[in-house]
Image (cartoon, rainbow, N blue to C red; front, side, top):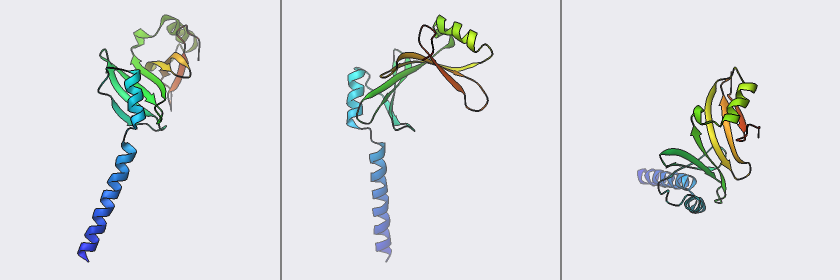
Length: 141
């Protein structure tokens, strides 16, 4: 009886570990797409985000980047955090006009497969922070 229970326990643990390993394994298409898009970046950290995209976290020229890919390897977007002082002047002027009392909590430079280049500016507010996307010329996306 003890052997049967022990055998079932071992089978359960190995099956569970095997299933978990498959869900955490980065698809080869994603790895290939990353290497094609960012040749020479050999040490990305991958994770599956809440939306089902594979995120590659890596450094380029000392700056941290995140590139998102669909499971089939299709590139979605790449972003990196920037300092408030790196926000283009036209966007700074738009923020001063439109949100003079809001505090910026995060600014990101984004290059998207579908929306092109833009800046994602996050403002502090009660509840969930507010995100506003701008083009380099200060117009909203």
